[in-house]
Image (cartoon, rainbow over the protein chains, first blue to last red):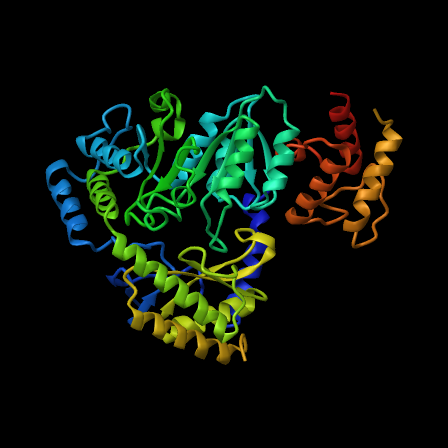
Length: 400
Length: 81
């Protein structure tokens, strides 16, 4: 009998070889206690969190937590049903209303995760004979949405407007086309040239879906995302997002002005064939979204933190994923997995948690330490973070 | 429209800059097994082929192509379409 697990042997061996060098497992961290949006206890040590997507620090907001507790008391722990059967409560509709208000759009649909939002939207919008044109560095949920559907899939080079134009130009003019973009690309934290991309997509009569998972909350006047900041509010057909980043809970959504949008509730399989979010989750999400509309001061502080960390790391001699801070993600590029894990462990032992990322999740075969900032990180915490990077970088030989 | 031989020689020429191991190219040469290309190399190579022939090879089609011979046939088919 063939052991179906034998295909994973190379990965198991690689992982074991790394752990045998005595390092901790970067993908096995447990937060024993979470003290605030920016600090947790890991193995008894107070640790600054610089690897979460809690950009706006909403997870411990008193209003958000109170709304969740109230919904838990009044509506119970879960819906035990699909959105289209018994799983739509007043809270789900309120959450969709909050999204419509936040984005200034006519329609909103809430999914159980951000991953499912992309899976559902992409696989349902583009059917047999249609084309999906996506950036090569797209998130796994976008690729998986392509594989779930029946459309033809075409990639263009990351953030290349010319390449997008060329590829669209080679497709049959009459075919349905969906161009999928992201406001912020999560590995390097770079943003898309949306106005140029949108213009090219329009020229070729394609519809546009923009994923704002890492842009919601702090780009644009109302915090809608990169598309708002860059003035593309009226040109993007579908905005996909998540509650698991700036909103501070879990869930996914899509907003749109398309007049036939509501039919998706009947035809979108990742919406229909799964249980809806628990009442406490949609209550926390709705409250958080409403508060994010008026979070100008937090936005400003998050940008200040991001720029300070970027400049500070650059001054220390680290190689970074972007020339300037384009988002709240600052990616430190290291030469290989070993250097990355040693640096990661040195930081962890000094009291700082960051993410590691490696191929195939990363572009161009790079190894990364990914830092993501929070609006609740204080100026002093950013100073501490930089001091820890300096010490760990020197101890591991990553910087001089 | 090009003949199969013409397409084959143009594809072989496009393979050259990516053929780091100097593998001899024949119809049966596998991109993954013989040339040992990773996904990034495949993407660059596919873009080069698309530009050379002014075609689109969708990811769905790429999944069906393992050998040089299969690529030649796929390009011939796309050109006649």
